[in-house]
Figure (cartoon, rainbow, N blue to C red):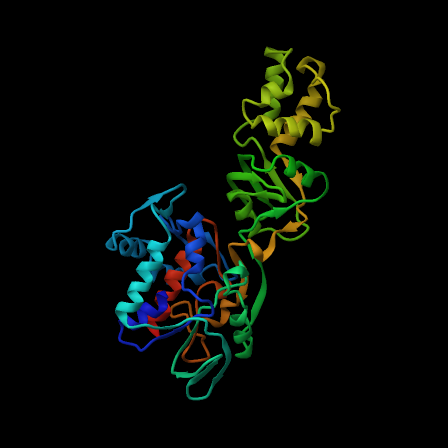
Length: 382
């Protein structure tokens, strides 16, 4: 919609073809229905892309402040939740209404339930759909990725269209998605389903300090969603369950000061008690029964236990996949795309924007900002 609005405001005749029965479905379901529409701090480091400089031009041409100003002009109340993330106070419907009103006011023509079946190009682009045929000097592909197929728009057609025009499409994968576990770790996550805590989680290439949530399938929450975008199948992740604390030192000090305390008594001051109990009987493989007192442990045992807490290592069996992924990583390689206009460099009039490109934002409103910025740039230049 952003591209359509921008182009129409320039006097261009714009037709927006939408596969699903409603515009803005992903906006409506995001952020628990309140839409994390952007972030106060946006820069290239918040995006994964083969060319780390590619996003800079679009983000500078249309910034988060531009979108925030538009939201404010429409008197949509919003708030910062955490880490610069901006959410609507009331509903994501406010953002969708703002966009739809702008489409109507600028004269954008919208066709819903419209499936594109063929695209050809000679002097113009010829687009065939399930109901009509259209011709245009310019064609903008804003088809999104493969995430959340239940919304009805995750067809992957944008990737096939790119390949039709000999553009490279990089391997896609579910991103910003919960991890699944197996074996003893799955048993642990099931037992703790619904329990959350603040952690520092990392893979060799990246780490995040945010909250983690145990689920009946594995691990979720912001820390895990963020990490999933940088994780490769079979790769080990390391989770510090007590960031900013030296767990071994805490246990050793407690043994010195309160030798009759148990491990659970000490750790429950730092971790959810249910987690401590589950770890004690499942992870550390202790038999059920009365816990030993701290003075019954060797110092080396407490050090080992502390190291486990600060460096829990496991290998997820996978992720929940596109069904629950917020975005799709991979996509149309940006090497053939102009960062200043979003036009395919060797095909005049053909543009790719948003999630269909191999640009993946971190959690926190960055993927929406990429949609606003890349859409604006294409609309301003076509």
